[in-house]
Image (cartoon, rainbow, N blue to C red; front, side, top):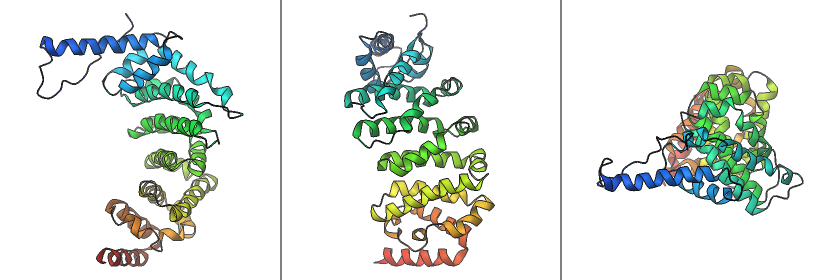
Length: 315
């Protein structure tokens, strides 16, 4: 137990006993002991599956679970063992629902580590995200594989959620952009949304924007996938996905070369009011679209789009 963090804590409930009172301390101590025992169980192959399930369910309860996982001897190695063990089931695709659930529980704990300020950079320096990339490189649309992709994207999403150039610089040295683009093309709506969010966060960083706009090949790889998604959304609208797509386009328009290219390759459906109804209850995204059109084409197109939306809202 010497390697386990003594600082594991939970927030006291409002109106309950003070943290110093015996009534509050006892449940807190029990939770600490429970978490520490479950972390120890991860290193026992016979106890690991139940420990993965319990910890993944309770990870929000423990504020310092991430440092506990990181600093406990053999724990991260056990989680990586879970990940590597299913590689043979990726190709040909033979991953069972049970195996998918088990590894996704391990990924949920890694997401906890990726989210915590004390372990995020340690997580990156160990290059642990690379272990997830084979899951993002799959093409099977069955539920076990989709669940695996989505949970893996959640780990990367946790890394980029906090604006940190060091995180973006690390990811750009890997294959994250092509892997996200693959998911944006063939994943479920939720997987597409998370993958597009990751690309958006990369673009919002100056290093990421320069990287994607550095060559025509990179720009058009991203632009063509975004354009195909816009066409698909015209048939099956999703406001939350459209929001991230528009934000990606708006950020691209901040780069002069990319803005010039968007004058010819921005999807017509973003200009002709196709998504007016979809955006009528999302004023923030509507403003982003207005700004995008202003950046790319000047004020006339924006005025026309605003007039169409105003007419719809008046009816």
